[in-house]
Length: 196
Image (cartoon, rainbow, N blue to C red; front, side):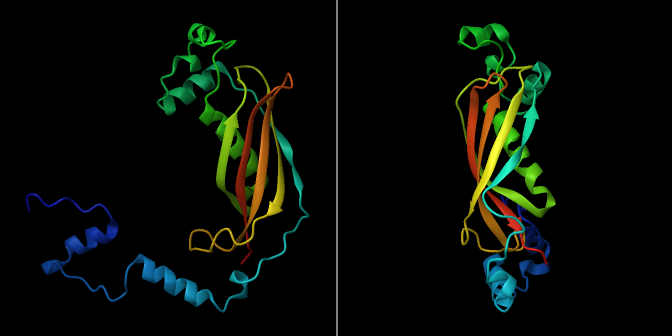
């Protein structure tokens, strides 16, 4: 059948493969199924009442240290298709006022995600994360990620199949260089999952 675009979603593929182009759609679409699952959970108190956390807030997170190498910064540029010369050419970095090649903004964001995720472990997930770079992170200079989980943000998310009942928590992080300079600051939402 020329001119017919190929199906792009599993449901479309199933419809296209059905004889005579018909299918039983009585089960409804994804939105209807999600509403039915929420209704099924209505009697489950786990999804109606916030659960107690096994710790008191605020929580100061353990420090996490990094020391990016020139090769790590170069390879991160390659993997992310970042062609900006300041990440792999020292002369270009100096021409823009940096002391050496500099770590990418997204690599710094990965440090924050790793910091928060290391504290959460399998008990949760990083739901949101934003950061602002305030200084240069150069190769072979130690970096230290500090953070604190400040408060609960109850009611921020509704439970779904892929994100069960959880308590959202406010995360704040800072990345400092070994010379004491602040390199970046972050904030985000971490979710601790309810136990089944």
